[in-house]
Amino acid sequence: MSTLPAPTAAAVPAKPRRRSRGLLRARETGVMVVLGVCGVFAALITVSIIAVLLVETVAFFQRPEASVTDFFFGTKWSPLLGAEKHFGIWPLVCGTLVVTAVAAVVALPFGLATAIYLSEYAPARLRAVLKPVLELLAGIPTVVYGYFALIAITPALQWLHDNIVMRAAPALTWLPEDLYEWITKPISAYNALGAGIAVGIMCLPIVSSLAEDSLRAVPRSLREGAYAVGCTRFDVSTKVVVPAALSGIIAAYLLAIARAVGETMIVALAAGGLARLTLDPRDEVQTMTGYMVQIFLGDAPAHGVEYLSSYAVAATLFVMTFVLTVIGHRVMLRYREVYH
Image 1 (tube, rainbow, N blue to C red):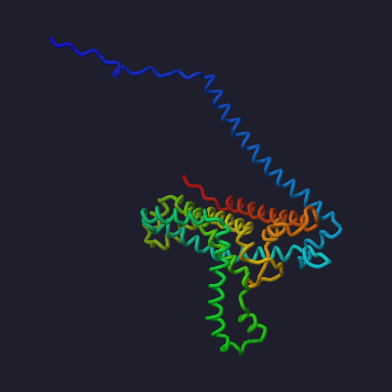
Image 2: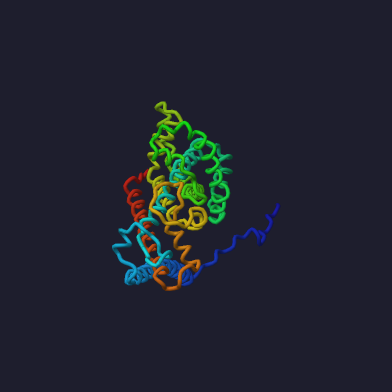
């Protein structure tokens, strides 16, 4: 008779190590404490920022040179020039909105088109390459975008103006004089158009990435149902997938707009430093963030009225971005689609 080999030590299963319940509870308690501290720390930072803005803004309005009426209803902003100072916020708001509008025209449609292509048309291998390349644009420092707008975008716009508009100008002499002068008006070396295009390029990855994630989150069953009734790929993309992902797309839009409103270095380098009440993107403008950069570079004495005015501008900018955030949250709740 043959005998079975004795079991080796490796064949015997090891007994599971018992973990102390007290150790597990202590570890979970430690994790909860760390997470709670992080949450409280983030809340304290937000409260501190709001408190600093509020205190300094109140100190600004207490100065005799400034007034609430002039700040909110004035149309002239000249705190650094001349003996008489003017603190009407609207030229800065106007410059910010012009740059943001140009950026939105560039980023929103192109970002959505890119997202639709990546989600519905691009092969998997091509998508795996294109999406990281697009997201690399978000990692480029904004000062690089500013120099790019200053040395590439603005000269290109001036070249197009000289070679298209000015060559067609003799055929437009029959237009009214004011309209003719507006059409043939040259593009300034510093202008809102070039700065807005650069900001739009910077915001393009935000729109395309977030919108593409929203489009891909739409269930496959909706696409298959549309194909089953004879819809083309374009019909499925534009009439089924995009409406189903509308809340995410609008959230991406609002996030990109808020990012454009708060952009600093691009507008400080390419938009200029002349605060004026204009809606023409070819003009030199100064944005709210551009003015704050100018003040903190040392052009104004510390704790002077000019210095304090930057906090009032920052508070106004904070309110604008906060309103955009609230609108985005309400839109997401209004158009949110839940799939099971």
